[in-house]
Amino acid sequence: MVTVRLIGVSDKKDRPPRSFALPQKLVSYVQAAPLFLILGFFLALPILMIAVVSFWDYDFAQMYPDFVTFNYSETLGSWVTWQTYLNTLKYAAMVWAITLFCGFWVAYFLAFHIRTTTMQMVLFLVCTVPFLTSNIIRMISWIPVLGRNGLVNSALVGTGIIPEPIEWLLYSDLPWCWPWCIFIRCSWSRRSSTR
Image 1 (cartoon, rainbow, N blue to C red):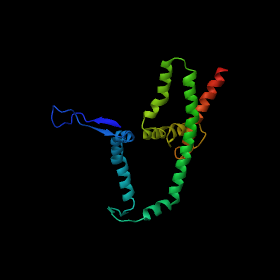
Image 2: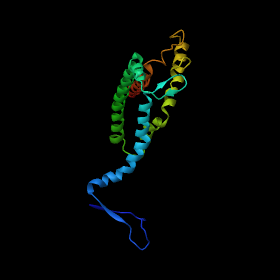
Image 3: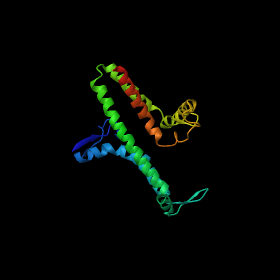
Image 4: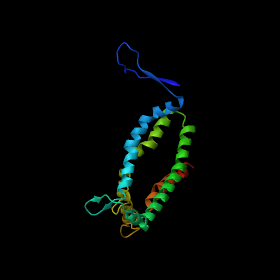
């Protein structure tokens, strides 16, 4: 049994604060109850409301409380939805694998090859600060590089390699490959220049 004292709760000032005994099993539940209530109200309740509203009927202007399942049959019956899910899983797996591979070696390098703590912190910040930028801004930043009038298209047209700008540079799977190709090229040229 654990004794819980309620500080500041008393009928009269001369009486000691109230206390009660609480079984040991319930102590952790009582401590977690405020967090559980907050998460229940601000997380679980909105998700439950979204689930309920997803079965309502709608038209172009408003929603009607009703129980219909054609919302799900239209969404899950479309090949576009499944293609989007598969692309999302494919990109998630690619990013996970690349991040795992590169992150391990960067962390290994920082931990075992950089001797000073100050330099470790500087290089760690160089690695992490770009991720504090909004994801949308990072995606939009590809437009000046790979867009129709971007750096790559301008260089290719200017050197005469292609007669007109190519559209698929920006809207294809290629932007996933560009950073790694540039990284490999830079590291290869650095390695060959030191020999």
